[in-house]
Image (cartoon, rainbow, N blue to C red; front, side, top):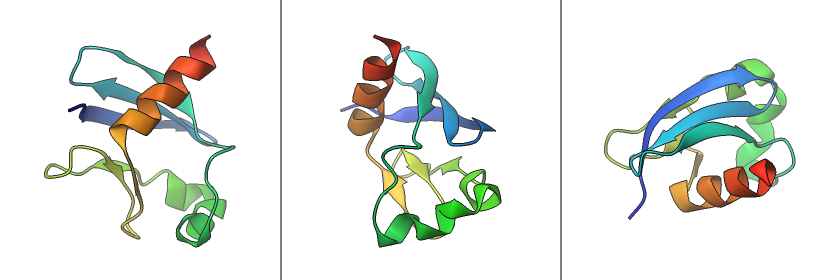
Length: 81
């Protein structure tokens, strides 16, 4: 099972992520944040409050929104291609 060890806000909707498999890099979430749980993200200051939940070991925000590490890794790989 894949986990996120570090997440840092970079700019706009771009995060830098480090995974427990040793891979790391940027991921742009601008085109995937759809649905009511992501409405607060229209405020970039809210989006920038990303953190890694120590129990879930994935990215989370203050409104309890989260994204699966596997989804983030696949998106990151697509964007690097």
